[in-house]
Length: 154
Image (cartoon, rainbow, N blue to C red):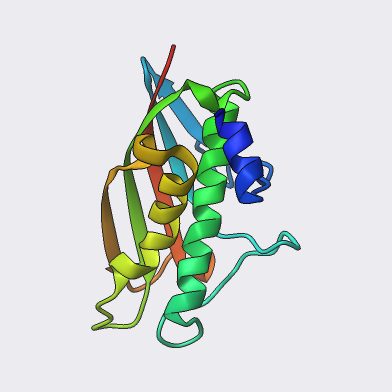
């Protein structure tokens, strides 16, 4: 089954890949690797999802925001692959950052929103290493940011 067929089976429509918001590019291809810049969560109306986990945002809402970041990662990978997600050999790694209160212990459960999505879509090729880190703030006060690296067929 193609990845596009898998997305359709899961009822997933990818968003347009967000443009870079500053002096960087959304992805870089180096040999057979593609790195995806940190993705922040956008609501369906195009506005940023904002807030600190433990104050403004629940862990469940942050998990959903991480899933949105995962959708944007897939959209960026698709753009990097010229529209062909079947070029993905493996999701290698993701890095997840959680804007949370001091002492918050559940960053892994929040970043599972992105990790679970990548495995749903890519199967075993979506299994990856990762980091899930808590921090005291993120750009524009978003609750999560997720970056990625994947191996692609040249």
